[in-house]
Each structure stands twice: as C-alpha cells, then as structure tokens.
Length: 607
Image 1 (cartoon, rainbow, N blue to C red):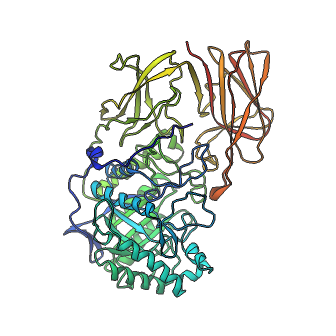
Image 2: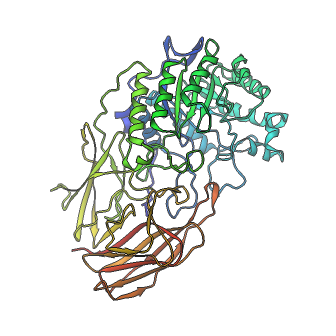
C-alpha cells in the first residue's frame, strides 16, 4: 500500500530549474491561415493532457474515488515534461460538470446552473499560473459531448431535459453561457490576472468532440468573443473532415479534427486533405490523434509539418503522481485494450505499444516543426524521497527526464552510502511503491535516491531515516515467475484489461486448483496477496511448510475493496493477508476460482 502524503502547494521557486527562460509576451493571433506569436509563425507538435484540470486516474488498490485535483508538483511535472519533449501547447480536458452518479467528494467544476466549485477553479488558476511559468499555451474545451467528466447531458439533466436539448433550448444555452461568463471573467487567485487577459490561454474550444449544430456553434463563438476579444475560438465539432460552416463563421478562428482507427484513409491523408480545405481560410489544428502504429503516427506528424496545419496533439500524456510513480490510463475502447497514456521518459513497460520509439519520434518532430534541432536532455534534478514507514515500500516524486533511479542506503546520517539498487524504473509499478529493499539487514537505516538518464546522474534526493527494520519483505509484482519456486496449473501472465484491474500492468492469472510456491531464506512472518476477481469473489488458500513437502493451512483475512464497476467495468479488488505466521520458509498459494494476482508481499525475519 502507498503511504499517504500531505503536500502543500509549492511555489514556483521550488521548481526554478524548470522555469521558462522567457515569459509569454503575446497573445496567439491569426494571420491568414496561420497562427502567430507576435510576428513569428506559431506551430507545434505536443500532447493532450486530460488530467491537467481533473485527475480521473487515482486508482490505488484500496481507494474508492478515482477523482482528485492535481497539485503543484504534478502540474509542474506535466508542463515541464512537455517542454522537454519540445511541445509548446497542451490541450486540457473540459470544464467538468457534476454527474448524478458521482461518488462523494468528486470535485467537479460546475455543480448546477450558476453553481461553481471554487476548489476546482483554483486548480485551474494554478494550472494557468504554471503554464505561464513554463512558457506553454493551453487549449481549454468548455463542455464535453461525452459522459466522462460530465457535459451536455448533465447541463440538460439539471433542468430535467434531454441531452440533445442542449443545442437548442434557450434555458440550457443560457446556463452554459453563465458558466462561460464565470470562466472568462474570473480573476486568477494566484496571479491576479483575469482569464480573458491571460496569455497562457491559446484559445477557448467550444467543446470536446461535439455534435453541435452550426447555429449553436455560431451563437457560442459570438458570445465568447463578446466577453474576450483577446483569445481565439476553436470549433470543437467532432469530425475527421472539416465542415464548411466552421470555415465560414467569422467568430470561429481555428478549426480542428480528431483521428483514430476506423477510417479508410490514413491519418496523414486526412490531415493533408483537411489542411487543403482550410488553406487561405483558417488555421487548422489536429486536436487528437492516436492508437495506431509508430510509423503511422510519424507519418501523421510529418503531414502536419509538411501541410499548412498549425499543429497537432497526440492522445495522450499522463504525468507523475505526487505519491510516487505515474498516473496511468489504459484505453480499452478505441485503444483496443493495448494502448495506454504515454509517460516521459518512455519505459519498457510500454513496449506493447512501442512507447520508446514513438516518444523519440514525437520529440524529433516537435522541435523540427519549430525549425529547431532537439537539444540534449539535461541531467535530471534530484527526486524527492517520500516518508518511509517500511523498507519494502519506498517511493519518491520523480524527476522530469529521469530514465531510472539509484537507491542508496547507509547506517549513518552522513554515510557510508551503498548502492542497493540501480536502474529502478518508476513506471514498473502502478499506484504502489517504486522499490522494496528486499534484503535489508535488521537495524536502523537511512535512504536517499538519485535520478539518472543518458546525460548523467543527479545529485542525491533528501535523506529519509532512520528506518527501523525488523523484517525483510519479498515483493513480487507478478511480471514473471522468477520469484516463485514452482507452480502447477494453467497460470499465465496477464497484461491486458489493465483498466479493469485498476491499471495493474502485469498479473498472474489462473483458475481453480492452480497453485504456486515461494521459498524464503528465513521463516515467514506475514503475507499479503493483492488479487482481482473479474467475476465472483473466490477464496484464496494459503499454507506454509518447513521442508517444502508437508504444508499446513493458514487462515487468511479477506478485505474487499469493491466500490462498483464504474465507467470502466472495474473488477473486484481483494486483499488477503495473514500476520504472525510460524512454521516454515515455504509458502503455497492455491486458487479456488478465477483469480488474477497483482502483487505478493511476504515478510520474513531479517538476518
């Protein structure tokens, strides 16, 4: 389990190594069919970051609500990561709306007609403050066509009407315009700058993947312009081919398309055709594209560069979690249960969807479209080591650009430091600690961590300790069977359906009667098994042995952390545990039904 950490909102001075060299000087404007920054062309390859305003991916094993607001560390990590990748623009997700089925504590922006959640809008204040510090521009869609964060159906539901009434009903249009007025006239609580005067906003997008009639688009675009003449307006109509009305409206400045598998034409062909439609009329942005091979994605990025398109945004990037590691988001729908949100630097965990090669192509194209050669990636800043209650549960806030990490241990505050692990991949675990010091001797120990990439090794993190160790713990993340002694049955490694398993990227999957055995060098003290049940919850049998032949049963406590299937068909997470074990060095686990095991922790006496 992760250690809860309370973090204050840190000021920018704490992140000065990542601050932009030059503050934003101009609003982005239009010249012909191009975007310009002052008198310079403005073009980009970058990412959608759906969690920038509202995190929907906080899914630790035992926690109920996947929704929370980002903090300063997370926002800085997200936007500094985009800068290192060569991006200058981020498209957020929408201004969220309360859903009738929201879990208690879900922090939506719009709570009802004219009712707004100040905490959620303060997070958007913080995102804009951070974007200014990082020198990045944000595209902000105003309402969602879909259910995920609440949208047109929820606005309609407040008034007892249907979602399609959103486009034509005068009361619903007035309710939505009330949200727009609140947003555009808001003064940022961190910077004192009105949103309408904030240069970090590239444009307002009418919404995400809307099926809006032309009349609605014209009215909303006109209203946006009446409140905010500084910023551009992008039509969020949902299509892979531009509609003529969007190109004709005076108050629509930018047009966009989204591209996913399913069209007969390739992304590159569609992008070139749309750029020709927009030529001489309006700037054109590819608002989302993804879930195809790296070659096809690279072709799409080349088409953006070679055409008159102003830019393109890949779907999607997730940033680091303030409690260690990254946020994760598998794509079981259009992503074919293969693709996940990307992380930087890329990791072998993403080999199924070629993350390493794709992100290298993104960085190359992101600088090339700006007429630049990619600079060397700098040595990462020191990570921040989080409090340690157990040497088997060590986590840190990672560093932008860090490829892996080096964990060091010492018996004294001032050394002698020993490297206990090198090449630790923070993407290897999901919503669990990054490292377990499995062979630590009994005693009192201090820890620190360094970040590493091809440019070098960071300075040490802060020091944490002394950590009192009585037991050492074997931790099996179930990515292979190397830590088991033996097994029987039809066990397999499961790497798909990760969203249903709360983003656990690798699991042992088996069925009734399948068993496996672990052998420890000293007597077992306790065991924890983190299991998922796609269907009915079954028991797990556990037994111990001193000789590996004669086993006696253990009584396992069972804790079920199921809070409903949600939007993604979540499975039932169940923790099995036993404490104060005696009687041997061998542990046998046997299934009593269809089960997937995501993590096994076995503590033993430390030498």
